[in-house]
Length: 357
Image (cartoon, rainbow, N blue to C red; front, top):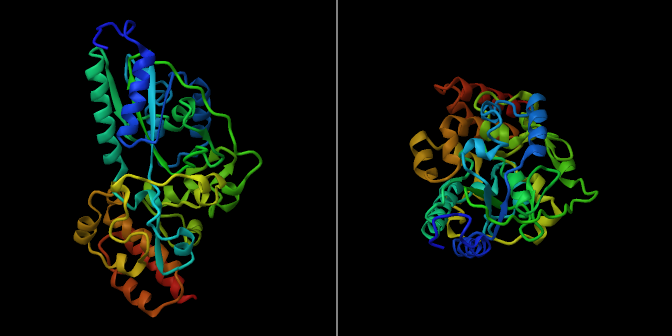
């Protein structure tokens, strides 16, 4: 594999070696695809034209680079897609937490170390191994760090199929896994996409609290609780606040009801272990954190990225939705004069909700 011409080394042997390295690095699935995303590009255009991306401006501003890998990284001819399971058995049952209005529900992917850091480090190691084996190799790793159609690439690479909730689904892993990609300039053999196995099931559509899945395979991000609590930086529309219930960071409902997740593997990566007891914690406890405590406790997690102001906004909504409580009223009042207009607005709403119970 020390040849300098990418056409001269054994592509099939290299692909097998890449799979072996990937598994050693903790990835459960790996596949290779070509870069023809023309069909998905049409769907992306339509999705953006309908405004379903909301304030996710980055979905539109990169033009067609998202659906044309070679424009994002010139010389790219293949994409290696990899998946790493994150759900753990140690986390408390999600439905039980959702049923307790005074507890905070946090999407299970965010309970451990920030997946961007975990995957990026492993992908970089894998890329270096490929470079050592093939000196002419050029590539780049991506983990939500650039305009990449990761679900479509994962589908083409045979990692799974796109579920009706728009997430990638696997018969072996369900949907509880992160995706990462390496764009490469090597003509590796491509894998065959899997058949779809959703059938007539519509559980993910039916369970969505805000009806964000407006049709099979079609998500209106503006209605999605993950978007509202994580991506949206301003005020949460009043029409969705009660529907958010006690979900303060993301939402897993569409995954929790998916039959394929009953067969899912569990994480073997220690970095995804629950931190700070976030799988079952009091809303009041979290709302009392000042900014320094927020930063100290959540450093290294995905949650850290939203910042303390948005954190308080989300928890205020959840406290407004909680069962009537004098303690909640008193704690909310302590934030009623917060320096942030955003926090004050949501605290005022929460106080009104509590008072009207």
